[in-house]
Amino acid sequence: MVSKFSSHQRYTTSAGKIVPGATTVINLYGDNKGALMGWMRKECLAGRDPYKVRDSAADIGTVAHALVEEHVHKALGNPDFKALDRLEYSPMTMEVAEKAFNAYLHWERNANIEYIRAELQLVSDEHKYGGTIDIVAKLNGKITIMDLKTSKGVYPDHIIQIGAYRNLYEEKFEERPETFILQLSKEDGLPHPHPIHADKATYAFEMFKHLLGLYYLRDKLK
Image (tube, rainbow, N blue to C red; front, side, top):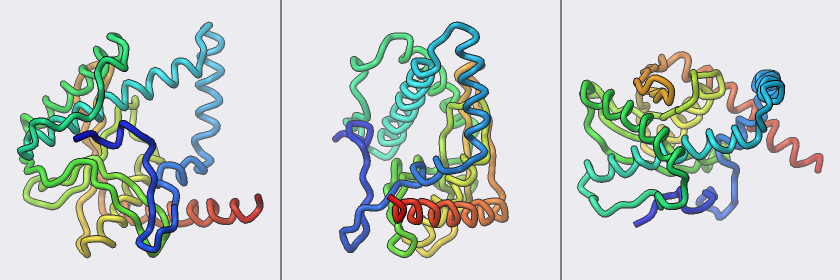
């Protein structure tokens, strides 16, 4: 059994319409652009290719997510599940990703968690978008959707994303879950938990709906 990491994920409504993923929609969020340009300028001035740095960071994040996915599947009684081919990635990428994975294990040892699903793919027929929730679990006895990040911080677009995921879960299961972002540091190898308050997740989804509207309006201009 192989995870979504083996191919590009596509989301389709029950009526067969292909719809965007939440992350594609959130890429329209304007506050990211200025920070991205500043970061690219800094990398160029330091003599580094920002695109290579970005791609390397993306690979590390992909591998770290896959390692956690394999771990959760084993905890759920599926020991043969494989989320990635380790030979496709460089030793350096694997080393840094495993540091982030160890941060997850460090957090898990002190968490009151009961796993339910890993990489849960959902689509909203009402709002016409999809998304993949990293982990669904009972955390401290409450149904919680978890999103894993290997970035240096938790940013507004991350909160918008988990707000969109909460709506997907609620629409499918008619139950409102808790929302939780777990930052896995590649630098210090430590976990940094960020529970997202229900009010903030609600505001985040409102922002997401505006971005989704822009996404579909933009298509009409093409």
